[in-house]
Length: 303
Image 1 (cartoon, helix red, strand yellow):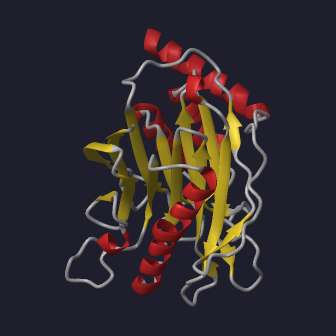
Image 2 (tube, rainbow, N blue to C red):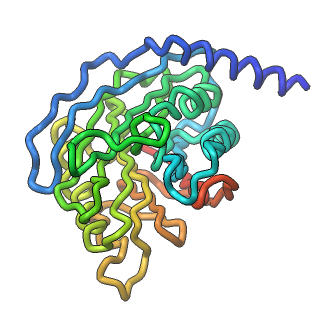
């Protein structure tokens, strides 16, 4: 009962913070940058929630990444009447990841459920979010969920209060796209001095296109951000790549892993790629009832 009361208080604190949602990052949005040939950068602004309580103690080097595809557009056959999002929020509170990479969500899912869950898990620390909508080929505007909100990918992360020096957002659209109307994008956040995180959801109808997009993110975008930010390593990328690990397949997911990086996949199409200065510890799957993908947790320690 005491634990339940503590949990209820933490949830109320998180809800109060998210009701105002006024604590924005200490830096302005990163301006749109020129296309690199493989991507077009788009303007984006991070949202950061300031610490709301006492820090939760944890191993100093612990860095856990949780990859989630929540199938919450309201359109796809795997949609479960929005129940995947609170289910994911419960998992976030349970496992307390440092980073969550999210696919197939609506923009409102972040302030309604997912960010409050992260705040509840880490009440004494800063929590950030960066969202990137998928883009319509025909209009160049965001793809919409059935409820009218923007549909896309996000990163939600935690930075220890003592280490928080601001967050900068990077988002963009891949040049290589399949013939469908939904154009794939990425969302990245640089937590200054602490880590770089990215989330993406790659083409579902063309493995060659998905591989080209994957390579654009990991071979072009990540080095570009590191160069611009003066960062070495400290990088974690997660997503539904729509690529499997298969050494007999030219579109093997391993073919988009740069030197100096490690990939850990769920045995299907979800992968986490991280710079090798992060030490691998273990992985685990977490079954989810209301989406067609398991939660994929990769436990690391970071430098």
